[in-house]
Length: 343
Ligand code: PMV
Image (cartoon, protein in one colour):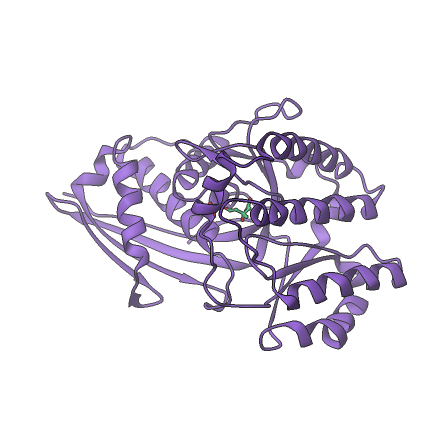
């Protein structure tokens, strides 16, 4: 039997409108919109060898990792539609380009990279050639089955995942690229990730998504997320009102945390340092008039969003005012990126 191999570098992404709440098969309760990062990426290689029983060896940064159990489950799930998965031994090795133990979720880049390898192996094994859109749609779908947010990581620039009346072609099954519709100024957005706390999250995103199912604000959350994504998408097709963009993005991030705080059980993920940083960002914006704001995922770290042209002033502000509130003066300097690369 032949052996096959595939290797991809896939970025993480940061959501401007968050995916929060899911239905079975990892389908989202609301559409989400994100951009891929330039520096935070995962590099994964999958080698398939002949075997009459599927075997899996997984190394993360050269070492065995407990993530292997999640990959095993993932392969089980995918083997229903990709039966060749059961006919090989898998050797998977993976590494991140960003420091670990930073509390930065890497499941988007991890499953993005793995799904790209699997979609690529599928076309090698089935000797078919889905190219361009179709290939990335297939990869996005596979990525979604591993981690919802990973569905958006297979594209560079901006991606939308989830069905919406305002975007033709949008679907819950996979993400689609929307970079062509977004004004070019948004491609110079930067993301300074301020690392407030690197401890393991108190709530896994899976558990968090679960909490929305019986949440008293469930229906209003779904309708608010739809309204926010519509407004944001319209706004981002021109470069008319950066402050309105910042307001919407901040409101959306705080809505996610408000949902977590008011869930049963309740989760309070923001730390005193997160709140200090939020307040300082708002003061800085008021004092300078610069369009600088934040978004936050399901954790305490603050993603400071700003335009590249304001870099000098913003970096001086980070150094002078914000690093003090981080865990060890650490931050990641990232920005909108170009998307995955086949190695
Ligand atoms: O992909 P998951 O299941 O880890 O969920 C990600 C959830 C958020 O990061 C909070 C929001 C998002 O859309 O990325």
